[in-house]
Length: 256
Ligand code: HEC
Image (tube, rainbow, N blue to C red; front, side):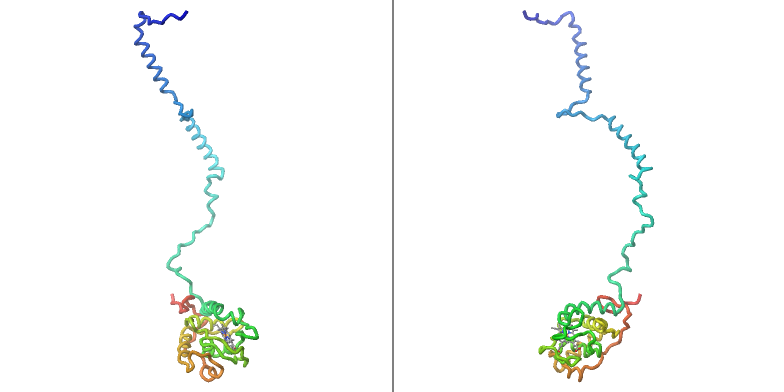
């Protein structure tokens, strides 16, 4: 037998309003509860954040004062001074004594143009190329030396010995006066040579003029011509080897 149909008790119908109110209150209470996310997660309680914040503040105080975690002293070196920013005093390469600046320029030219034949130490090879270390024509009159470099040489050389039929080819092509002055100064004061003077850029310019006016311009010089026309020093004011010059232009540095 089935349950008797539950019919509303008409005597209780006066409580419908009250029942309605109760249902509404329950629904409101349920709505205030934390909602589950779609994947089942629950929002984290604000109390938890508050508790963690307290823990962090205490931990920070302990580590920061006694410990080294936040201690500024360990990352700050005593006596550290920041380098001054580059200013007006620090523009480009600093001036150097002429003997150093000229020789540095000359050393590069020598490696590029001469060392292949005369050897990295200027010692020659005894058979095909003469030594420039100790050479009387390197250490002697500068005009003679310059004419050999600019025009090449048909032996004999300063020792009377001739090296090969072709002689030395001209090296003046592409050389600036600074290059010529540099390589001559380098050789007169390097590889054991100790003349102690500077072949200046002005002297090198004069050498180029003299070379262009030679009767046999374009041909190698030989011992006869060197002896007759070029056994003298190049014109130009001497330069004290300690004079400060610009290492690039080789011009005397302006007095400051
Ligand atoms: C291609 C090889 C070659 C190159 C490069 C060369 N020379 Fe020579 N040089 C010779 C030869 C060879 C002689 C000897 C010539 C002869 O006997 O006919 C010589 C002779 C000389 C002499 C004469 C030395 C003496 O005591 O009589 C001088 C100085 C000299 N060279 C300087 C230079 C300089 C400086 C350079 C570079 C700018 C240079 N040479 C580049 C081959 C070369």
